[in-house]
Structures are given as C-alpha cells and as structure tokens.
Length: 217
Image (cartoon, rainbow, N blue to C red; front, side):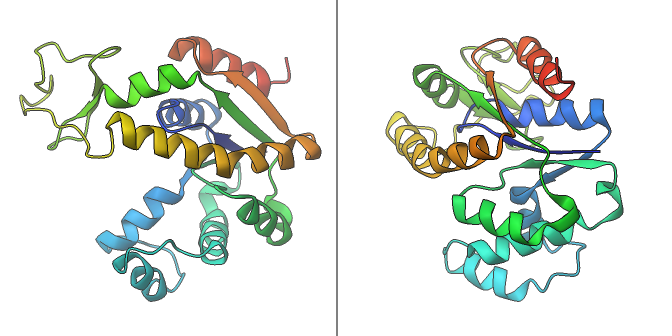
C-alpha cells in the first residue's frame, strides 16, 4: 500500500501529476479542495457534519485545521482508499501535519513528494494560464496554448483569465506557500519520508522521476 502526499507551489504542476499517479498506481485521489467544493455544491457524500464548514466558508473564513484534518481522515476511511491514496492540497500547514499524524493510526503517510520549481517559471506558468468557463479545460499561452488564440479547442468558448493570476497576486500566493511549506518540508525531512523532484522538467520527465522515487530506484 502507498500513502503519498504531493507538495508543490501554485502552478507547480501538482494537479497534472496527481491525475497520472492515481491512474498508474490505482490509488484514491484525495483533494481537500474537491471535498470543500462538493460541500458547497451539496454533492458531498461523506458523513461529516458540514453545516459548521459551510458557516466558515460563507463568512469567507479559513476552515480551522482540526476540521480540515477530521474531514480528510473521514474521506480516507472510505473503501477506495484501502489500496492507498494520494493527498493533494493537504497538509497545508505544520499544524495540520502534526494533527494528522496523531489521528491517522493506520493511514499514516509512507512518502511525501516535493515538486521543486523555479519561481520565475512559476510566475510565467500562472500569469499565462487561461481556462474555458464552459468545460474547465486549462491552457497556458506560453506552454500549452489553444490552437486558435484565446478560444477553447473543445467547445469554441472564449477563454478567461482568473482574477488571482496577476503577477502581484501570484507573488503573494508564492510567499504564502513558502511560509506555510518550509516548516512542512523540515518536518517530513526529519521523519525521513520527504523526496524532492525537479518540477522544472517536462511533464513526462517529472512523472518519470516521481515513479522512480515511488519504486525506490
């Protein structure tokens, strides 16, 4: 069984690699972002009481760490996680990591993979990002542009830019990531389960590196 957490800065390619990994390893993809979005949409299928979470989110407040940890553990208790899981977007803070380790019992992490990406490259990735409002497909004007400028290949919809993909906002998000993640990196390094991967390479090369780490090569 492989219980893995994937850490990466905003725009670091975590989502792309996570999708490939769960298919290749046949493990569950656990995204805290997806869990909270399902709660907002009313499609959440777990047993965790969601009213308190909705109250925080409706007020624009961060959901407290203890609730984030508990709802993640509740999700990990479902049948599709028996063969292992990939945590995406969790833990975000040292406090979450410590709480998770205290409560996880048989669901502790075997491996934490850190995608390391050059900051200038990250800014280019994020400020160049465009998305289709209809199908949700993501493009990048520098790396993966649509065939026709600013038009979705699949449904012909004009692409949009997220309001938080400006240079100034991106730099702030990267600062927050660094402040939150540096203690996490030290925590998992001390446990001996952190492995670093060069995220500046191509999608294929990054995936190959990750698989080599998982297979212990």
